[in-house]
Amino acid sequence: MNKQIIVPNVYNSSPDEFFNGSAYIPREIGDLKLLRKECRNQIVYYDWNLSFKDKTFASRPDNFGKDEIQIIFNINQKIDWQVDSAHEAVSMLPGEVCVFRNKNYATSMNYEGDKNFQFKSLQMTTDFFETLLSRYFDSDKIEMGKSLFLTHVTKTAITADMFKVLSEIDSAEKYHEFKGVYVEAKLIELIALVLHGIFYNKTSMIERNKTIAEGNQSDIAQIEALHHRIQFNPADDYKVPQLAINLSMSESKLTRLFRSLYGTSIHQYIQDQRLENAARLISSKEVNVSEAALQSGYTNMSWFSKEFQKKFGLSPKKYSMMKTPVTENC
Image (cartoon, rainbow, N blue to C red; front, side, top):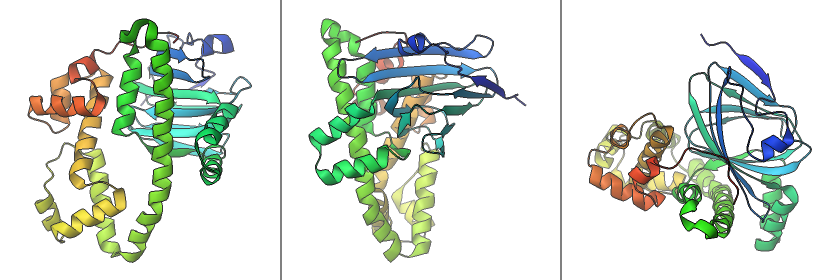
């Protein structure tokens, strides 16, 4: 059984080193590779790749006096996280994005030993974030945004469009002297996608709650169980006719309820989960592209490559060759 190590300020005690991307983890504890991009629009992008030798409780006592909005994209491992600013414990699953305000509060994360953790984050001042809201949204959306992001930890799924933009940011070097303005535009696009995902989910919850309230509770429970199964076992063989038989409902009822609850078709949800699972496996560097495809439910590599390219904007091979994070500015 792995021991638990309590590591105060594990990412480095120096604000200068942390914010210029040269933070580190002591070698006896683990390893950290960090890419940092800072742009003139006050948004900072971090690409984290870290591992610990043993089960580790990593804490940071403050945020170096900063009042910030942080957006974290969890790529490949479950992370248990405590954000003291919201007095909330958060479990982030792979494929989730989390938004919260850190007003110089302590944060802590629990990491399992002998695993590679990958996540990407955006940081911006709370003032800048509020300026974005006021610039592009009406008063109702501004108030909803302040309620969601300034006082709570808010989560949604990392969508295909978000994955695509993250990949584009990571491969921005191909634009050479234009990469700064390219990354700056992509960071704004990424924030827009996150806000859309959260606002849309908030609005769609009204429809979802209506479906739950008016529907047969046994049917709803079965659809929710199916959704959970696809999320965590995307490689299984799913066919709507057989699923309908297994759930003792018609195909039309099954597809209608699933779309009402989750805003997408069963087929599309399966494809999204399979591709996102493959992307996580490829990013982890633990398997090659072919094995990632097989473990995600694909046997036709040509079809897999075509769908992967469509979703993420890169071929699986190019995605796998994305460089290991290093320190860099826009």
